[in-house]
Length: 135
Image 1 (cartoon, rainbow, N blue to C red):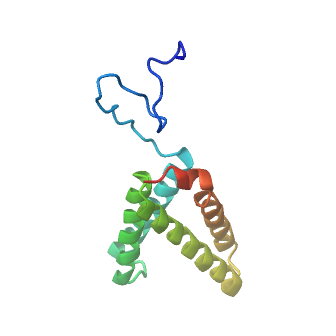
Image 2 (cartoon, rainbow, N blue to C red):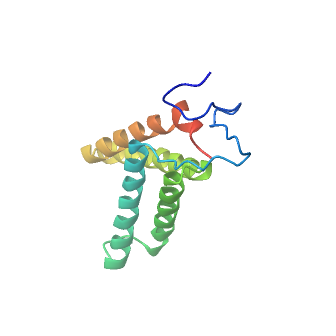
């Protein structure tokens, strides 16, 4: 039985069935807005590191590897790849640990705020609904 709002019945995989045997057109997958925000956060951190290294504000050139890691994680997460999700997850966990360590050793409140923000990002990234959407 067909629904008046749908043109065709759905097949076994939940995709619209076609009568001519042709494959259904690929749907465009849009990442969730929170994942876009996390990716932009990682991109902002990467650009901050690049500017700090280039302008000589105390960042050693070795930090550019972190910048490349963050940019790669940003791109992979936006394209909903599992490896991009794993890189973004690793980035926010390591940043949270680093910021909490800074707060514990130097008692800087800004590090506590940034570490808490990274923990919120971590808790969003481990949601089962997000992991189901990954390719």
